[in-house]
Length: 100
Image 1 (spheres, rainbow, N blue to C red):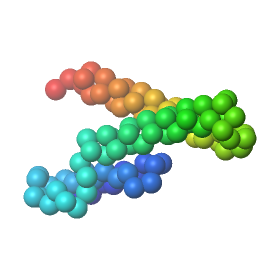
Image 2 (image 1 turned 90 degrees about the vertical axis):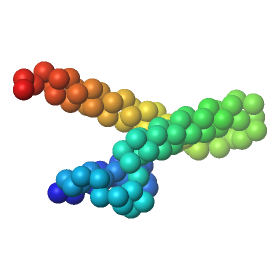
Image 3 (image 1 turned 135 degrees about the horizontal axis):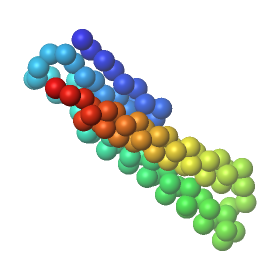
Image 4 (image 1 turned 90 degrees about the horizontal axis):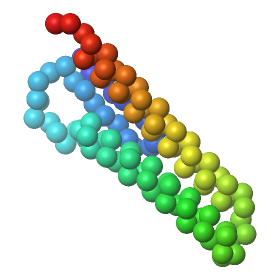
């Protein structure tokens, strides 16, 4: 059994295999590494948006479309992360409610 998870952000993949540790850790990043990479990208998107807003407010740029686009991308990325987190928490809670 091989399940691949591709996120909206390019280059972020995780792999879960049905076999115990096969020793081939170089083939795909771990789930933790993937999450870390995704959150770093979301954080960078937020920082880019803040910088573009600062540049627009100080008059360094007059490209309002780019400022708004960057802000919307950051907002959508953050909303996606929050929704994914909510689903993961729900799944964890459901698993904890299961009786063995």
